[in-house]
Length: 142
Length: 217
Image: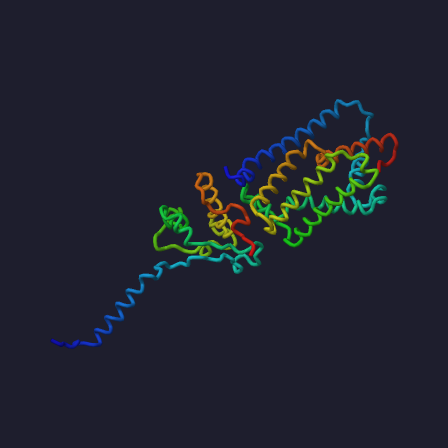
């Protein structure tokens, strides 16, 4: 028995909707980029060292067990301590400026402190594939 | 332990401690043994001592400097660069900040590059001079060639590391290790003239001033 679609427009809407929803399978759901180029001329002025290629993807994978709080932090309003709030992950430069501000370290110190100190701890714990601790290890000349 | 971390950490501690304690003990020992040394009583006028020191430093002040103008220019500029670069290079100020939280201004990068290349050329000049000029060759021992060579390697590896030419990590580690070596042996070698020059020149000037009423330059 032949039957016809009662509401053709509904069929079309459902088809398109299914297609769009299905195509999100291969889309990233993250709000950040995979790779960043850190070259903050607006904060540092003229750069005295080459730009740093920072792979957020690499770090997210390496620190999967520790979670995003390994790097991302905000200041708790009551206690003043540094805590991790899920969903509130910012880029480093959004809080850390060129100069020290109310006990917030300046950006260079925040970067060096977060990056090299963590890499150094990894090396001390004998974890093999840590990141660079030398100047040129991160500031690679192009 | 990772070699870079070792050179940057414990080995640096060892080298600096030897340098500081060694320098202090050598100076103290010098002053102590000077007190027990039988000496003709030198001039009490500080002017004579100070004059002798200044005549050793100010370019073209002493007669020997005027007799050897090219050498004077090379050695004085060499010393200025060798003193300023380890203290005021940006890479070094960052390390001091990383370790001790203290910070000071740094040299502009192009100027630092030129100064480093100048030190390398000056070291080459010293080595060539020591092996070719008859008078100098006669009073030279192998150690007198070794020192300019080590300094040359230190500044060369530093320059290569800053430009990231060659294998970066090994060159950088080599630079750190050679400079720590220089620091550690400084109080116990002829490089110690950095510490002792003041005292010996002051004494020479005082003695010449008192008894001979003459200059010692």
